[in-house]
Image (cartoon, rainbow, N blue to C red; front, side, top):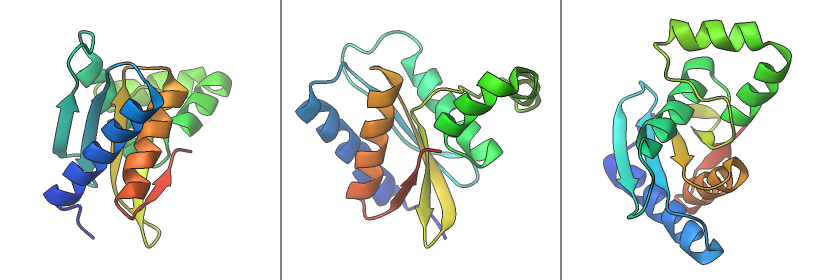
Length: 141
């Protein structure tokens, strides 16, 4: 199953709408397809430097290890060496904190969303809102 560009854009719009309605700080939102290719990206005015890279790393890490970044955080707390080694193995693009959410359709992973800019919990909530708003299933771990 593919993740079409228009669906990636819908996810971004839904995540940003949730952020605005919730009064969140400016966000960077990335959407990757199942291959890890960047399908869509937006950074709100006022996002701090490198938020985009952090957002992509949240999504990329989730895809690379097949679990949302909340689960990666739990692994990092108990298996720090594993997460460090995995981060090195995938070229450093892994951020083990909430905000990287797998996109599922009929149980299959079709991509991931990574968001950075507010607290990790709020980043994750915005990602879930964007994914759910696009009619897909969110898996934050």
